[in-house]
Length: 291
Image (cartoon, rainbow, N blue to C red; front, side):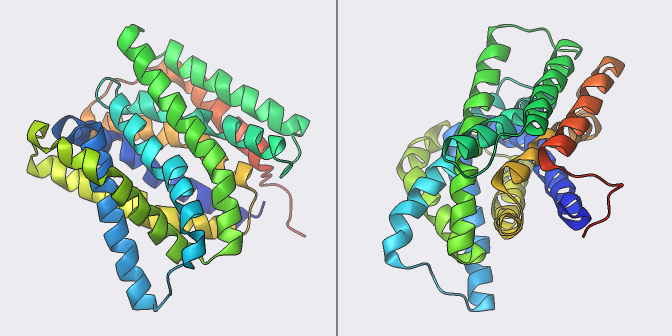
């Protein structure tokens, strides 16, 4: 992996890490399903406008069924489950559990014969999980049933995204990234339209929650999805999902800075292991020259 790819992954991780504190703000106001629908709608609008500006065409109608499946795996399911976890977990914890994504991505790629399950990647995944465990065990929050349920919701979201990233890779190679990204979020908006509308009586929006929903919809859900599709044209799917190992560092940091969530010195070993895991899974070596 080239240095510019690694830098792009860190940039994506930093912005995706932003989404967890914002979900923590917006999810109680709109509910998990309602917020998922709003995120998809904002993302779809931004991407469709970009398509019009750049004069790009919609994918062929025969691909829409596959795009809908891609939407279910990489947008609808992850949004709903992460939003659900945001009701009970601090944003830093949700970001930490999101670090399980690369394991599912590596497993999916190996099961479908897309990539080899090398010893370095296995060690990287093991170190990543060990880092996550240390972050949780040495963190400030007591483990109870709500933490367990929130963790399970995050892991289901990570599994869905990890397996879906393989389909993202195939779609990125077969179609233009921007129209594909727009179609995925339009499909997600249509899937979530009825269930999200049904939750409107339970919503109690505030201006802060609306601003948070707009940002995670337009930027971290829409614009960043397009950027990740572009990156997937140049790197393996498992390397792309490895950015999830970096997200906890930013998620914990943003939660501390903006939501005053507690952070302990005991979380440092876990963060260092997460960094080592990302390097192993991506194959990035800052001391090696590119050919």
